[in-house]
Amino acid sequence: MGGENEVIGTALAVENIRKAFELRTRVSEREKLIIEGDYYNFVTGDLMKARQSFILSEQIYPREVTFRNSLGVLYNALGQYEAGLREHQQAVRLAPSAITYRFLVYTYLSLNRDEDAAALVREAHGKGLDSGAPTLYSLAFYRNDTAEMSRQVAAWADKPEQDDLLLALEADTAAYFGHLGRARDLSRQASSSAKRAGENESSATCDAVAALREGLFGNANQAGQRTALAKERSGGPDKYYAVVLALAYSGDGSQGLADNFNESFPENTVVQFNYLPTLRAKLALNHANPQQALDTLEVAAPYELGLPTSWFYNWPNLYPVYVRGEAYLAAHKGSEAAAEFQKILNHRGIVLNEPIGALAHLQLGRAYALQGDVAKARAAYKDFQELWKDADPDIPIFKQAMAEYAKLQ
Image (tube, rainbow, N blue to C red; front, side, top):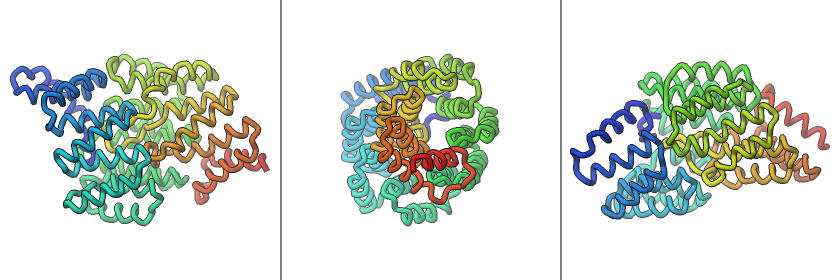
């Protein structure tokens, strides 16, 4: 999405890396190592092979910042944030730049270390290095600083090449607070902006994420309509996941699409250990089989806290945790469900303004109600109501939440 994302996952870039990999014997050893790491990271998606490649590269070229950044991003994708932090700290020390600072700020945020993130932003600014509006926006959201969020939006508005990411972030924030009508408008604008810039995959992802949001909020018809827009365009695993997960949340039978997903990305670590288990678990829940859902999600557990996309627009974080929580609710295991939804609330710097960050409060209330803990249930419902105090009143999940809360009185 826009220049801000430094996206390497687009179809053209993937094809270029594939060609470079075939010709890698013709380049220097350093370039060959970069190409091999990028090939495993972005073409096959085999993060274990990519990690081996980057570790070897780092040993040979310990002062090469490219390998530090790549390894840091990879560790974060696997949910190994302390390891990612060490790499990004070294990258900033070796070659301070806007991008090395940005990666380190996001890693601090993922660890809920917002004071360190804020200090780093000030340090970068003092060196004349722009941390980037999305970074500053995300930090401001974490710190509930709406004035700073507005400042970043205003400062960013005159940069049309980055409009789609700005609009997508704003759409997510609107939805987080239950302003679904505004979120729809912003997502449409984000999709159109990306399409005008020739970024068809980003455009399709905006539509698919908007569709997923509708499904999460209980608008099955809206989810289906938005998914149809995204399905028309090809794309990589992140976009495909958004489409199929949106269909799963709209109740659509998408087992065939999940099978195709598996066949299309057989070596992709994120697909095999995050996206597919989550999809299959949600489909099992749609067929009233929570135990199958829980069994399916076991393989995701080591990686579930990771940042699965290669973009700075990290929209699919913690969905394995959320769906596991739903499965425990369906299995009438309130204590286990509460632990999963609390995990989402405990990792605010990872989930940020994703809709499940707000919905986790409601689901936690449901989990406590299932346990018969009325006091804790009421508190969790009230937390959700506070977030959605100005929400659009016709959102199905909001109406359900209000009815459930009334029964607790």
